Image (cartoon, rainbow, N blue to C red):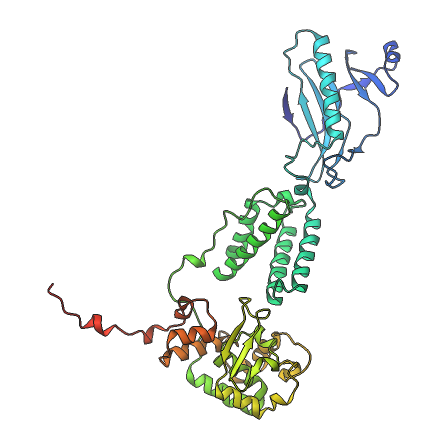
Length: 446
């Protein structure tokens, strides 16, 4: 038996013979049929034009996929074939499938017997969930894309609620997912089922981000990182049988050299301090903590007064708010502690957040967005700073300045809570790197 795929719907070559005494010899649910030449060739079960398949091992498939029409055996002069329609997810509608009967039989009776047996087997397979347009690795792979979206969003929300994901990470993953879905809907043939989520689709999406949309290499690589985590989630739930992102490569890791950091010059730092002393000392405190303590903005938003020790001169960063998930302690310089005392910070309860409403201590947590918003709406405009000077640039500036002051890299690493000295060394500027005097004045016999 060999199959022939055809998308078109040719006109049926069969018709029922109204006057046939032999039809009474068969059960009432079957009708004997003939072709246009009145040649008897098959028995077709009468019934509705379209029906849903029975619930078997493929009961998890969507109802639309489990639709089909009853197979029919047609006998033409040149060849015989069985035809029926089954739902094709790729085009979103029923598609005709034709299975040709092998002409190896010399007797018509033998061919008819073989054809009727095959017809019964095909009918049974369709009732049990077989679809000729699909390869059943797992029923979960034919879940609709909308179902995948709903489940993935619920998964992310649960991870955020249980603090498995940080708020910033949750927002990033949600944003990446929304961008992908918007791009998918803009395509001529958007995916509707999860099995259509493959490597070719991801390659087109990543190329669109970088080449068409013009995103930076770093942003492109961030999308690739999210795609990999999303594919692992699909794989763990058996929605795919292999990782579609295995062939995706990041580009940033292939570039050597120092990390591109924006550092504010000393005159800009002095100008910033004078401005904030006169306008907003609480925001100055936030800038101090970022510059001197290297505490990230998101971590700063969760600092409570109980985390600050005046006696030891330290700030404790609990693991559930730190970026790396580990507890950490940083040194609190005297200039920062003095500003805290001047602002009356320690008159508030230990349970209050250091930066609550209007950047002042309070019982309610406020997002780190208030730091960047104030910088963008007030500081940058009033001081006419260039766009590349961001609030987070104060952390890069603080680390770089500390290295310029000849502070040993181990102390800088501990204050910045880097996992290795290699990360700290990224901040070392080229203009302070000096030659090794022992190597420089070495004398040898050569």
